[in-house]
Amino acid sequence: MGYKLASRREKQEDTFVKVGSAVVGGSLLTMIAGPCAIENREQYLQVAVDLKNAGVQMLRGGAFKPRTSPYDFQGLAAEGLDILAEAHRVTGLPVVTEVLDTRDVETVVKYADVLQVGSRNMQNFALLKEVGRSNGPVLLKRGLAATIDEWLMAAEYIMAEGNSQVIMCERGIRTFETHTRNTLDISAIPALKQLSHLPVIVDPSHAAGKWEMVAPLAKASVAAGADGLLIEVHPCPDDAICDGGQSLTMVNFSGLMKELVPIAKAVGRECRCNAEHLVKKNAI
Ligand code: PEP
Ligand code: MN
Image (cartoon, rainbow, N blue to C red; front, side, top):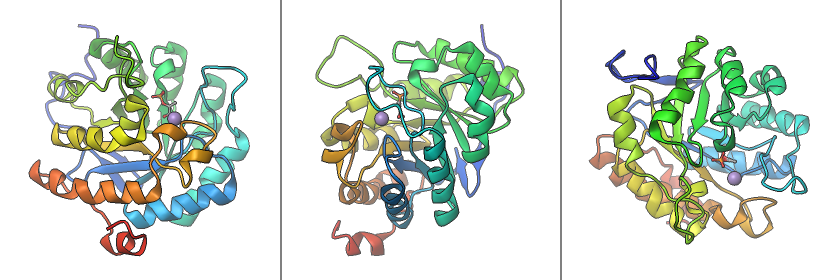
């Protein structure tokens, strides 16, 4: 076996990853939401406040974007990190953002509460080692063509450097199916729960690639035992610089939060949604 620190055999009890006020792996479902990329200050701060009011535990937003084409928007970089830090100050919520390059880890860790290693970098071993030395919690996305064993081995690279705060994130894998952007591997949730003590969250947005499919996949993930969800939300998806087609509006996101409440309860968890805010937003 290529991994041991990440293995359930090595550690039987579930690992809780504490991030500010949030505990990933606890009985409260960890809802992480925000736009794909931080596009500008006003828009990000507004969506951050709205998401806090809706009841999320953490904010997301990319400052360094791994785009398929080098000519597409690559993120606001340092300016994006400043906006992220401001959103954290304004809302008090922890923030997660992707780090693409080993040379940026030292900087990003000063601004972000959780370092995201993206799907395309899951086997960037130099980056895994660097975030492993950073001491900040790491959200490790599954590689788009990675087996569960390869994914756990990537977690092991981080843990072997002394950082045990790893959150696994299933985000869909590439299959023969083209109707969706990727195929969400729901079975990865119970498989990881059996093989590992690390918390598991699901990103239905990058799996589906279509906003209409995000809510059903989110609900299935919670029912299957996910510890949380990472969801792309944009105030105006039609105008989003990236991933608008898979982004939920604030109203749709709030509606999903409400629908998750009974599903979470049925599997012994809590989804904390702010009903008063939803009524104000005409979501219910
Ligand atoms: C993202 O979360 O913005 C992202 C790029 O995701 P992934 O690495 O899963 O494609
Ligand atoms: Mn995205």
